[in-house]
Image (cartoon, rainbow, N blue to C red; front, side):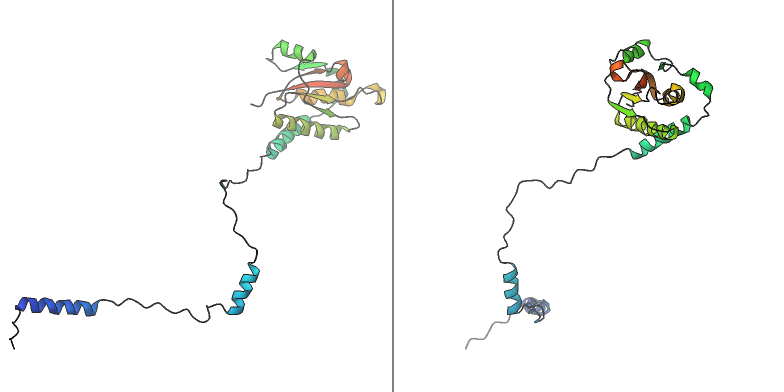
Amino acid sequence: MARRRALHPAFDALAGLMKASDAAAPKPARPEKPSPENVPTAAERALFRERMEGVRPLPPTDRAALAPPKPKLVPRQHEQDETGALREALNGAFSPEDYLEAEEAFARAGLPRRVLADLRRGRWVIQAELDLHGYTREEARDALGAFIGGCLARGLRCVRVIHGKGHSSPGGLSVLKTLSRQWLARREEILAFCAAKPRDGGEGALIVLLRSQK
């Protein structure tokens, strides 16, 4: 028998390193078997199938998921501020002499004369109105404050305030007719007012022009 030829010592060293590397390499982990506690029983599988009977996946849709629109902001605080400012301005003392100071028309200083003339001719569209019939002085003041504040918040420009002619008042003199003129004249947002035309209430109502809030 032929004698096996001896390998070079370097090859013997390389073979030893390869065997050591194979022995040190980690062996693939064997998959763990599920715990018997996590495996559904036949009864549970049957119950699941029963509950899911008739359930179908939703059809695909190309609609984008949009967020619901945000609710429109209501300027509650602005209305409250307007009403409070008017109440503070209108709580001044009142005397019988004030009746004599009431005027049929009012225009803010610096307002062109043609603006009041157009208001008297009815060229402005009346956008809202307030009827003060049956109100006491305090009720009328609060109602007028809320009305003006709301109209300003809504961006209205021309409104009507019905104060009555005073036929049922003592002496036939309308207290609210005089007071409403004085209250409105004290408010900076009021540009002008005048007695309404006969078709709009005549001497029993005022046509009021509000300052633009833009």
